Image 1 (cartoon, rainbow, N blue to C red):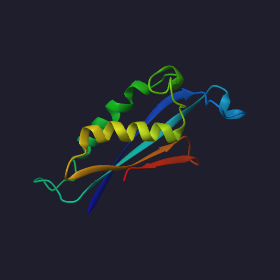
Image 2 (spheres, one colour; image 1 turned 30 degrees about the vertical axis):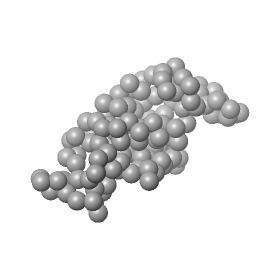
Image 3 (cartoon, rainbow, N blue to C red; image 1 turned 180 degrees about the horizontal axis):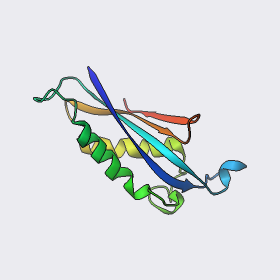
Image 4 (cartoon, rainbow, N blue to C red; image 1 turned 180 degrees about the vertical axis):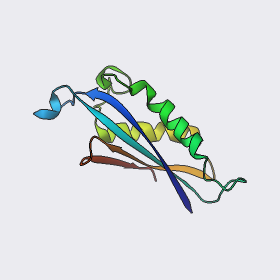
Length: 123
């Protein structure tokens, strides 16, 4: 079993719903997002995936979030734009692109800052 990870950073604002206090006011983060992909066997090149392919897909998926107010764009116009929900949305998007019999997106980590991280595991 092998795993690879790729990261990107997105600067975006959000306003948490149902979170009285500091989280409820408009604020932003430099969100660090790490995708981890697992493979039961390597491809003919010796890769789980090419890092460039994973990084490009991750960046393309989160690019619409760059310098926006997340609450105003789908799917966060309907779901709370928490780090947990961002992780799930990214996981689902990458899984739609990469998951097959050999490769599976298994984990997305989303940091709001150096101290706060949410992780979504796909089983």
